[in-house]
Image 1: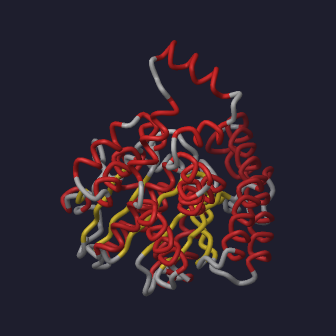
Image 2 (image 1 turned 30 degrees about the vertical axis):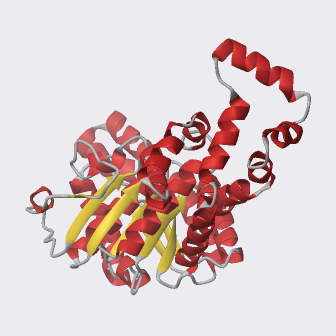
Length: 381
């Protein structure tokens, strides 16, 4: 099975997995390949390292989708018949845009954005950044301007925070904190506890910040807007659970990454989220086969001399060990998946950092099984 088959009829593809396994590269390669097939695709990353921009040959990405000029992609053996767009999420700007969208008037939105509690909530509070990332994904999906949205997520355990964020944030806004602080000020003090009063007073003297007043003002300004947060959280849940969404897990062939992918896959299925399959990156394929390293050395000694031939044979042996390790790990992964789609991308000699590299990855992800086997045979040869 190939990526086009996995994404048939899908509007959202969420790429998840542990850190350092090539999620950004995989997301970009999928978006590039689907654009080549005629789709209008946006790839969204929250990767602060800006690897996606570099891979697409762009100096920078912004908080709104930006089209990758076809000239950057043409002339490399690939014809783009659709459109490729890319963006890097700015969580603070996205949160601001959300407030501007649901506030009853521009004045209320400006007051909220100027509030100290809001500034912390929109940048540092657990769940706020993940919430805004999903909010952006939801807005793009609702606008309907793209045939496919490809999301590059943070490392997998954070990615689950990412999925839970709407419910966590709305629970906070609808919970005891909101109810206490929208009542008269004295009740807010009693909610915090009498022991907090000296601390808050000292904070105000030293910093000039009246935390209680800021909290009361913030929750007062939100008012009925929490209903909008709740509604959006419900709509996001529907989008993520829809049969037009696909969760594609990305891993390396190392045991720890595979363990993480299996854990993530189990959690997805427990949550009723649509799991599509697994991409295994940087797979070492067996080059030696039935030959021994000594056979390699013997074959090369006449051309390279004994010392260099032995060093090459030793390198082949190291690679052979890695290949056997990868084969065992992938066999275990395949058994755990029980026939669910599994796509292998080989280990390349150099890092994928540009469009040429993305095209190499794309060839494996979009190839049929016989084509992929031929490509792997070429790598081994």
